[in-house]
Length: 113
Length: 114
Image (cartoon, rainbow over all chains, first blue to last red; front, side):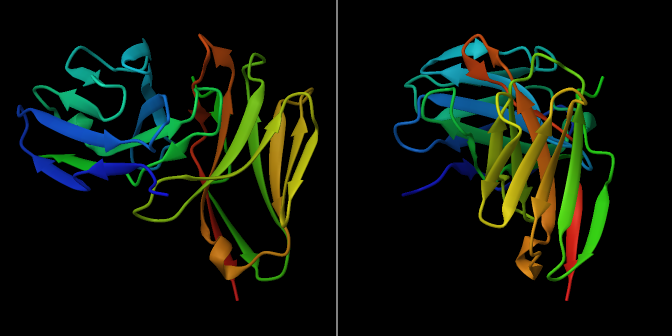
């Protein structure tokens, strides 16, 4: 079946702009995660959804970052007033219930100029 | 505060030999450990995992060993094949609020030489 998909694959924006990154999880997976991977580092947890609700948003770096999952499937990560330090690969993962193996999408490479 | 550490950024191994990738962790609350493999421009792919109640888990050419007293785990790949060339991430988790929030190491780039 289809894996986790993320769009766009690449996003270039200017400092101060607003961006939205989309994640389509594997069908039927109730748990969805966002991670951020900076160059030379491992993925870093941002936020976790169980169904429609954010069960853990402790990894969001500041209030410029926000994520939603209104229908318990697709999720959107929103970044306001982007800064150059936000440049990274943003990874989405899903799992069947939240205590299973996480399956990752290919990521969105965000570049803030 | 790096809770999961992979101290070797890169490793080069000859095809057919054993590859050993190492990982150390500091948080004794971690109870589940995973290895992910990542090719360029792709997301991490799950490889193998181990629960803290075990000290070894084997799947084909891949074996993960866990030493809880040393807070150390390793991934053995034998025999190594050219397609194993990738970045390998160690990850750890504990059941926090019902979720497996993964904490990753920095990764080790494995190169298998023909």
